[in-house]
Amino acid sequence: MNMSARAYDRILKVARTIADLEACADVLDHHIMEAIAYRNLDRPSYMGNNV
View 1 (tube, rainbow, N blue to C red):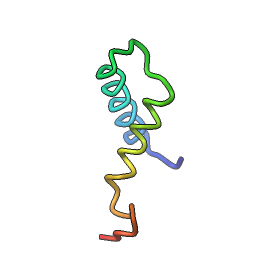
View 2: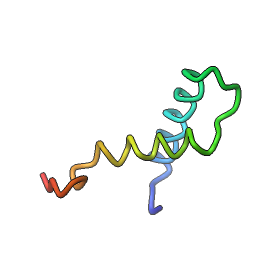
View 3: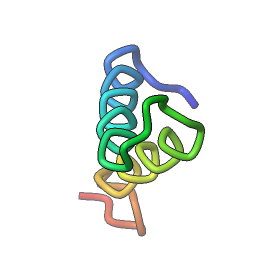
């Protein structure tokens, strides 16, 4: 996905938080996918906003 190690680490931290909020002991695929989706929403190029 062309991510830096720092971006990867942040996604894993967000995925861990999502899993914790669901009271899940393990980080599952859907937690990681949700974290990636949140990262994409935060990017300036999302929805054509080239700021």
